[in-house]
Length: 194
Length: 144
Image (tube, rainbow over all chains, first blue to last red; front, side):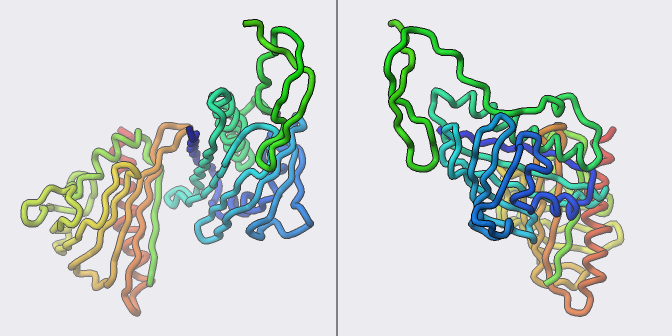
């Protein structure tokens, strides 16, 4: 079942200024606390629709995302995940800014949706909502002048690890990559004792 | 084609704001500039296609037709059929969006219209005296 996340906030800065930061598809390492480094593949421009950003989270996880739409008129862009170490299948996200005209502020909407395996649904939904979307919005608020709120202080790194396996050691076949051709790998693992 | 836009954050839950503004006949209840309003042909105010006929406090009469209403998106659209402003092809949209981190409501009000030679003046007039004034009244009402 698809997970839909929609989070919004108000940033105390003109929308045009926030947009100047956000429209750079390769600029997220400058404002998102979870992103350690990022590069556009093949050295292309970051505002070319179809561009792919290849980046690492603080914990080392590598993610590739492709720019699907970019609109300066709507102040919005959307992207999908091509490759990630977690099963964030069919992941599409959209960010959109709107001016708050009476006080010269900026309303930000961030929507993400994806299809996780049922067994990982809660963990991945929480990861995307808390560590990607909420953490990103909190960081934008701080950068553009708001005092940090308590929830913004936890710096996320990577999805919470799966609980440590118990049981007996055995061979297992696991999927180790998602988004592109999945890779089946034979390795030593543990099986639960029934 | 001219376009005007105004927006604000209302310090109240989206449901509470929507319950007030979704009533197409409720302009006298929440705007500072409408004296009285009725729905023509005694239709329900949430029947898409219904026409509201209202009188401004300065005496002008305006007729507007409901083009779309969405409880899911918390939005509605309407067109001006008759007004003293001399605008053509006037279509406006009103929309609420939840501000999830504060529980408040982002409200935006926008219109597109033609008025050859007077567009700049009307963009300012509608944006300030109608949309911004209406949103400001909502803010005040829900700040109490």
